[in-house]
Amino acid sequence: QSALTQPPSASGSPGQSVTISCTGTSSDVGGYNYVSWYQRHPGKAPKLMIYDVTKRPSGVPDRFSGSKSGNTASLTVSGLQAEDEADYYCCSYAGNSNLVFGGGTKLTVL
Amino acid sequence: QVQLQESGPGLVKPSETLSLTCAVSGYSISSGYYWGWIRQPPGKGLQWIGKIHYSGSTYYNPSLESRVTMSFDTSKNQFSLNLRSVTDADTAVYYCARVSSSSYCDYWGQGTVVTVSS
Image (cartoon, rainbow over all chains, first blue to last red; front, side):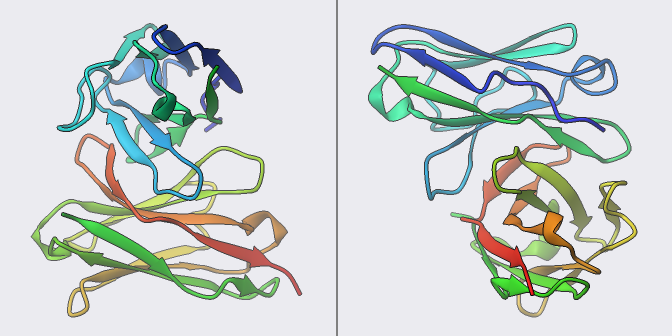
């Protein structure tokens, strides 16, 4: 299966909101409500931020939210903070116990 | 707190087998969940390799299935990845992770760099 499509970069000023898109197909994003998002700071392990499209794990600020429309999922970060600067990856279940990831988006806080 | 740590050779020769181990602490791998491997080649996105269930069932990415084997060592609370006949394209950062039944990875290792080169 092909990788999910994410914009290579996104940016926003502190306090602003930014949305990162993740586009797949009806065989992955559009076919299942199993989209997850990960944050990765340089040299650190990826951190789960959103799962099952909209759910937030314990400890993740409510500034992070997820949604999905058709074959496109989105991660919105509201009230941007300096520590949100990181790489973000989306992931979707793609059937037959397979997962597919996005290419990643580098979020810059201006 | 669940923690995972990858280990293995950082350099593998072409055509040989890449072998990595993921040591898990804070959770017994035989208690449940799936345990997976993900990699990131230089300049590219994350790529799903596959997962193993505590029952021993395995599920591999079809593009790698012919070369991949995953296994458990419950006595050491760790699981392993073997990738045969490696080429330059297998050069990547390799991550291990705990995988839920709805296919999200809730705990990850820090990643280990593997370079395929003669």
